[in-house]
Length: 519
Image (cartoon, rainbow, N blue to C red; front, side):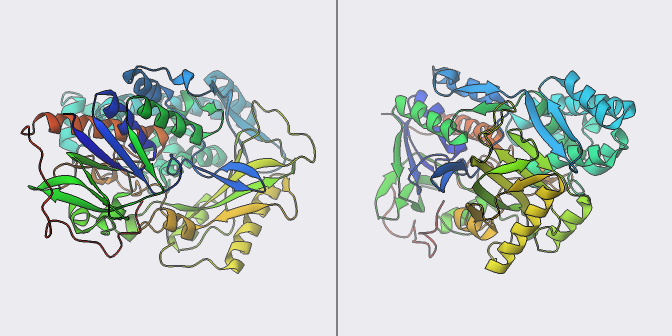
């Protein structure tokens, strides 16, 4: 009889785990409260248009090629995917913009034209350092199981490679080290922005995370239909191997028997028995007891002060004029430090940098004048969605600040543009017990990566996956977390006695007061 695994949540991590386990003959059931797969990789309807409301930047294509290959399939048979020639367009004012390209030599030339020969030379040294850090960390940390302290990492890297441990520069801030490469503060700001990919401030994030720039330089890919199409492809892959999906219902309670996880009770009272349970949810939801008291015992809370960033996100359907948009665009503020000071003070920035994803732009193609296009517009914000209610006046003020930042760089939207605004309150509702922190624990301080929740929990047979667990935030990292969960489950099931534990009636499972607020 096949081993049984129940997965809470059909986000990217849960989908990857479901496909990989099902392909190995495991009986997999995925429980998802939404009506569709993807978790954060979702779309919302605005003015009749489907607009991506989650991640938009797709990197590390090889992670997904490996998952599909391991399941006997080819990624390109499931999604239409192509490489973006321009990684992103950047601007600080209306006069000029700076593109980073898939071809690093073109990026170097563009930086030289923008800021001079010394800036181009700084880009070369930065690229070299970011690539070295990535090379050191990729296998031992990003694609390996979590290590709890530097010594185990040293063993993985190799104790004789002490220079490599020093080279990842964990004790220096990203902002400080970028100053060694770029005298031009605009370029320092541009490459510091990569810290926000994991919801963190460049002034508090270790320079180790400069590796994110190298990851992006390896390739940014465009998926027809957006990231939700990738989620759908992973679901179909899992279903091909027999995985079952239960949409529109939530896991209320994690059960145990004989000291290990033994299944789920759904909000409708149904029980799903399992030999292992994977929680593809933010660990803070577990810690807060939203899956019952046993879930709360399974993981520690990282606390409010260590939350990553949240965001103000406008999903807009609007005509644009002025600034020539690419798919990915960043329009910077003149004072980056003030932005993060505002956020530390509990408010969205009054003069923000703005990310604009122009979903209908491909290869710089223009949208006909006057025709509306789909935009996702993001401004960083504090993760206070559980303690502060954003009023209509605050929302209007944030919208005005966002529009001023766009106008500073020459980008105009319709005066009354159709849009939906997602605040930290909306993200708290979607990601309960997080305050709306989109990326889990912030990557602040040298020890942050060691303290992030790992695959295994304190309850045998209960595992974590998703962008808030090891190895970190982002779509590829979430997929890797699902792969690590699969490996841990198979390893542990192989060592179990060959009998089925039976959930004990009463006592072992108690209904949580928050059981209906699950992810």
